[in-house]
Amino acid sequence: MTAKTVLLTGTSSGIGLAAAVAAAEAGWHVIATMRDTGRAGALRAAAGDRANLEIRQLDVTDPASVAACLAGLDRLDAVVNNAGAGHVGTLELESIDDVRAVMEVNFFGVLQVSKAALPLLRASGGRLVTVTSVGGVVGQPFNEAYCAAKFAVEGFMESLAPVAASQGVAVSVVEPAAVASEFVPNVGLADDAVAEAGPYGPALQTYLATIGNAFTAAQSSRDAAQSIIEVLTAERPPFRVQTSDRARTVVGLKLTDTDGSAVQAVTAGWIA
Image (cartoon, rainbow, N blue to C red; front, side, top):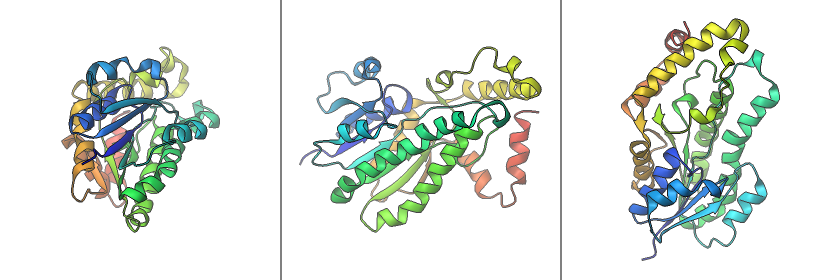
């Protein structure tokens, strides 16, 4: 029987890399994609000489790149939208173009890949999996743009799920909390960000310390990736999956907080 094929985005590091390797180990034919294939060294080292993992270039924000990556595929059984970029900032201190750039990668990039893949997924009765974040359920201080993008992804996929299911495609979102990866260092926050934050400086400094503490006990990328593999292989995958007990706690708080007071009490404490 021919191995099933899964395409993953954002596989140069972190959860994407770990998920690509785990899927290959589980017997999938893996198309591991990244914007810059010059950064594929870590994935190649982790995957070894596995013949069932191929690396392709894909910029999720470029429709031509998405089309070129999927060109020639006769079958696609699953897509894992993992590519994304963090962003720390607040509305008064950044431009609307900054916010648009965050949405372009984290929201519209997901839609570009998903739209292009859906005809193939319909044909195979496949699965559309998107890595979001607990930040797609609970808004986080100084993450307005990032959380807005992840909220948008969650809302879009929750709305799409029953429509896709009517065509035989299962839609799921996977929600990590803190994960030990290059995601936070890649946010690109300047060394003088606190000093440049003016009246927001003290709150930003406290927030960064809070987040730093959270990441000292972060889940490993490989552990988080196992949740993706479970969604890919489950007989009936759930719509929403958290990758850790911490993620389940954060998401559970929001889903039972009908007036928003419990969430605000928690997140206000991150900057107090």
